[in-house]
Length: 410
Image (cartoon, rainbow, N blue to C red; front, top):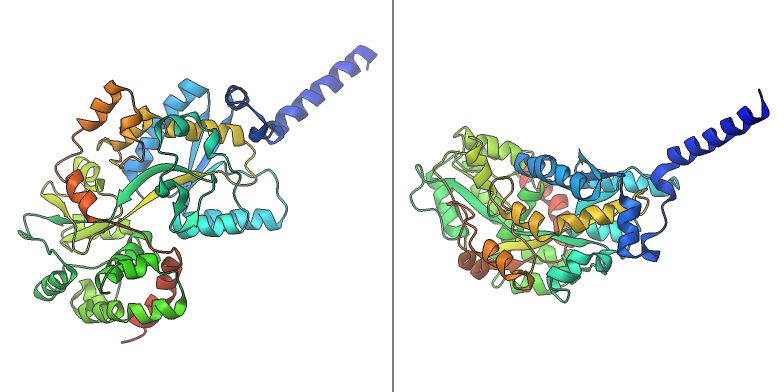
């Protein structure tokens, strides 16, 4: 081989090697200006791993977000459906193996999963305060952004949305939905087989139990304000377990089987096997009606003592190989345009954590005039019923104890 050819070949191999290492050699975004972060993100691929159990959410990401992110930032967004717990297990395994160049760039996370990820060093940050859209359009002092189920966020996650737990029912079959858990118990007894709830390993099923826990103590503040402990939870939860044991014989399939997921419960509702479903999204029924999954007679309700609500977030794994791309993508997802589209019932209908009063006047009017759909309760009703989440320790505790208290305790 001629010398000039050899030199060219070496240069080619060097360039090929640099490209193959790709995004893993990016500079730390903490050391960069926002313009430099955007430049570094340009032309890259961002892999977002997130729960994929809601088709409206999936369509929002694939049909609306991805093409606009490509157009505005030249970023290719790859959505990978995966339960958050499995994501964290993957990250934990990679951390133990010393893998510095991971394949996950963004995770959708909150609550117990965020607490576990943060405590085990699975997240990159802090990064939130570098995002222009967060600084421009969000209340940076809001406790909803400073704490996640009682865990300080400290800039390791950025607020993406906020939701409240509501029940859906078929108004052609139920004229007056229950106003309390006592009334729900009576309704279940009078309509055997027409109600059930997901196994609390599922997030929605777990939220149903946490909602019930609030209702079976003298005052929800007892649970909200008290730090979690096994002893305290055991003491306060006995009325909840007794309630669940009481309604069990009149549940769908006599309480011998519980839906493994919200998707399964929704299917039972859409088929008319049960007359109610539920979910941690006050507007979720809109796109399900539009898609012909739920009957048009579907409506929503909340019960006393109130409706659980929380903020959900986006975070970046410690070993993301494209942290700049992840930050650029998250900044876009926090933008007024992306938040407005997410608020529309067309895809998702998810409520926004954005501070509308920080928006330009024209955008304020746009947000305030949006009709979220007939199944969505009024803003006033939702705000008046809002109850913050308690310590995230209750989530895992309920998972661990439900089988003993309800399944094995016949």
